[in-house]
Length: 368
Image 1 (cartoon, one colour):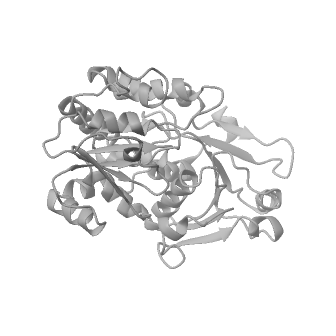
Image 2 (cartoon, one colour):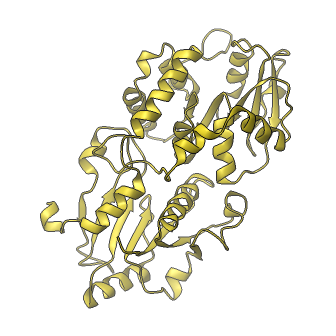
Image 3 (cartoon, one colour):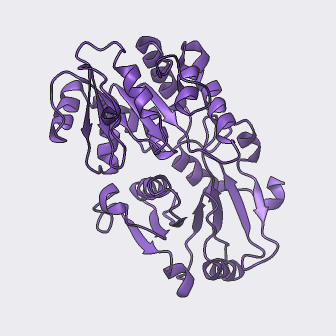
């Protein structure tokens, strides 16, 4: 299809994940020949996430304020991430463009969920009957894990790149990060502040591992080893800020990945290693059913203790005696992660689906 201009809007709520998703989306669009412009209210994390953002990848980064004070002409496609609502002056420019020619395709890229209702809501139109966008239509786009959802971010060649990242490459990568090469099994840890890291440490201290385990702590993560003596089989190492490509390599290089939110959650699935998801907690408890929905899709009950482990890590069930987590056996856990990645790889990725939708979208009347 012909190249189009995409405008992506992002408000940073959690200081990593929202921008991480939007940057990956823009990079993937640009890599496929599209023009991408990212409007963001706080681009500071790009300094470590994508230090070459200003000069490479075909993505231009604009301050959110530029779409408020003197908005440029909108692109062919406008993506608002996670219901962030583009500034009213920019939306007014979208409506103005629609009166003069084809309306920009307006997409609300929603949060990822495995819940059943996502299939019913994905792709629905939302005609705008009032406000600066009156007369425009916004389309709901739900990422997901089935053929009836909007897919997952997965740039072309990602699974094979992980497969080609051999053990020697992983060892060299970790050495370059200053991780001692002493045989301890690496565990990446990227979690919210309330994560039960002491329980994780106590669990790994007694988990099988010939040369012990090493927790690789992302910036800002507390070190559970300072909370007690867990014995010689466990140690830790603080990581620097990593670019997105290096974080992907870290996930592949580790025996186990503890991830949070949405971006690292999806990348851990593509890495194909055993992982634990620290889900974003919601005051109304909605994260509980959301976690169970993913475990159901994943087939967690085929791996003894997996559901119990994730529930305990997320505070949804008690810890075991001694303050430990329920812990799955590694072989079945690894096999389930490998099978899950292969199953997800059969679906079109999010950007492929977006490109197809924009090229062939129905009118709101046809969709209804």
